[in-house]
Length: 243
Image (cartoon, rainbow, N blue to C red; front, side, top):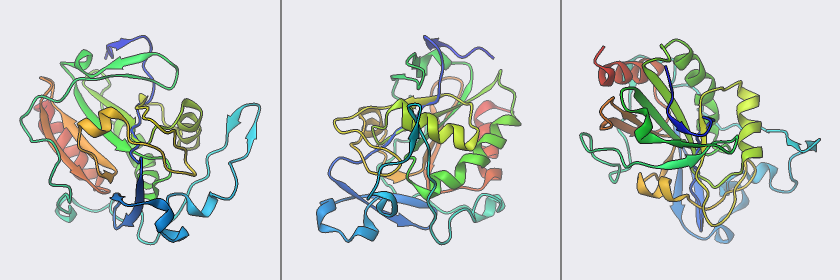
């Protein structure tokens, strides 16, 4: 499979957050319109690590995972265990997916419309989100089982994190799929919230993780939020690909 890029393809990640407080849900993390200063420390993203920046050696940030009760229980369940999405503003199935060009962690740029002819999974997430962390090894295994000539996963960082933060996350989980940065007005990290990026806003993301499946014609085939069963993601990807 040839991934059409502007430059070199690297991981895509989207993070949302300016002026938002994050509340953890079962199978997702939600961005709630509120002042972070008005919330208790336990409600703030990355509160457990907020007192100190992550350790760095030779310019490399060391990712520190978080944990929440109930995280990581959904992925191994059958498709019948799917929960409906909670965000009514998600873009409609059948619509042409909004095109974008985003920088990868390496600095090169990736264009969504350059992937026509392939089935694409967009994952909008934040590295501090424990539900996104739970999904990471499952998504790695899922796309490792699919032919790269027909399927692509793009991680879109929704929280304005920089390349060092994203690279640390991918290194920790051993992820090699393209990871993109969606920079907003205030940078985030895996230990604090940042501002929502413009592509994240365009895709109406409010809960992490949020998934969009884009068919080979560039149209939205399926979308949802929260952690999801591996079997369901595989089913929706194959349905979109026509296989």
